[in-house]
Image 1 (cartoon, rainbow, N blue to C red):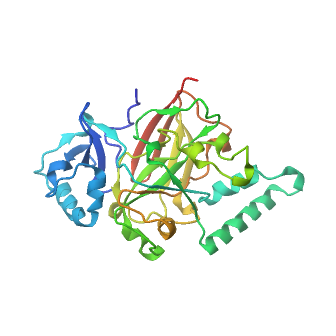
Image 2 (tube, helix red, strand yellow; image 1 turned 135 degrees about the horizontal axis):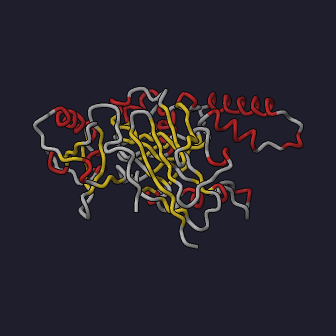
Image 3 (cartoon, rainbow, N blue to C red; image 1 turned 90 degrees about the vertical axis):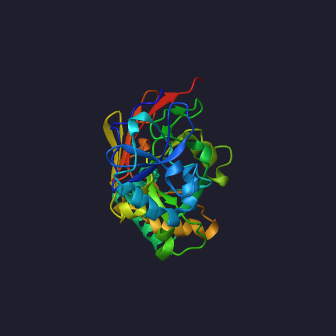
Length: 332
């Protein structure tokens, strides 16, 4: 059984947000949600019917003005959010993930993994990490890789910890949702292709990140990040126009009520525009695709406390609402 959200509407910034809901055992549908927790079914509210959130995002530039009108119309019939189950807000075709994108997080990792026999102090190791990140930023080289849509689950669903995952960890991330096809776009124009933003918790099994049988081939993101349910998403897509500047949003994750991550996007090495632009240089981004922008300091490896059966994670990002997910251990 999934845990309940902390509040009925998990408040967000702006006059409306978008979600994917279902009633009892009924089909999923795209919905407009207001800050008071009222729901408008968008399958019939738009001139051209939409069956999924991705249908809506395929027509994002054209449908956005109508969504504004619907949100402002007091005469439109709505139902209480409490009547529905909140699902992941969109089923993407592609998931672009990024690593090593928060300055303090990377420095902490660099210090934690330094060779103590080399004689360097912690201050020297931190200075070395800062120099490496400054060089990456100057050369415009984010670190982006591919995730699987099958890892996505809802914002209040239980997360199964696979029996083989020895070191499951959390990674709260600001996520951009694409609203127009984007290929080889510049950083200056990249945000024009973002429909809105949502919350992702990009769970990772630290024990399987690196291939032990063949270290030369590096990381194994398929194994470590893509178990079913390893990417709780949502609850909402908040339109980019309501979020505004993403340069100073707060990301906070607590574990069983204790704050573990609490950082601002000001600590990002590469901002959202540069991440979207970089991903588009190699791939063609499609409406509904996700660009996860990295996780700040405070992961479980930092605290020496990894996820286990019964843990409850609460996650917030400024203006985007809140997640609550419970961990359930898979039987061996």
